[in-house]
Image (cartoon, rainbow, N blue to C red; front, top):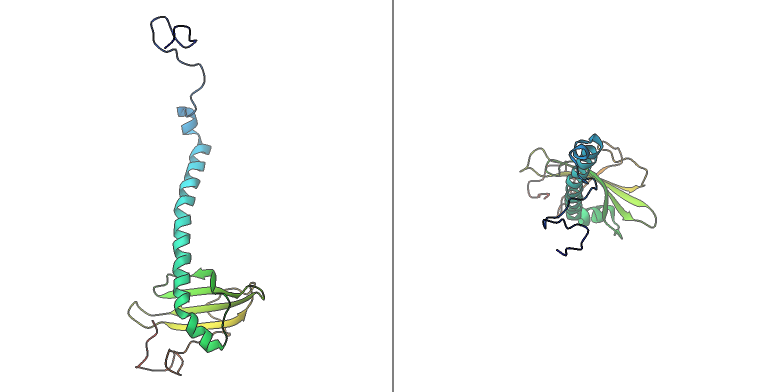
Length: 162
């Protein structure tokens, strides 16, 4: 270091600055800093989880799109998950945006007793954004099995859902 430097001391060592340490023990112990750090950690953990749940719901609904379009006798412009609930192993409840211009939605409700069983799917077309996503709704129709004219509730040993 240059001898004319203001930080240099006669013996060649560097003089400590008088400024306060940014992460002092007092600041680290502050309850506000701890709360902020906890919120940051929580949001970092929630965001990826929500992303993967959304992707799982979209994939689940995508598998039912053609069958629902056939049963409803119409082609949907869009097929985007807006709201979802359930674990998608035994239960799935999904609200799909199918026409953003007209604000048309489709609700899907699916259950299966256990992992190896067939899904029992029901759907309701013509829903609006304000309509709550419910599990028990009179508007739900049974989704027929592919390749079979029967509804899901009727016994059909030749068909499988998913």
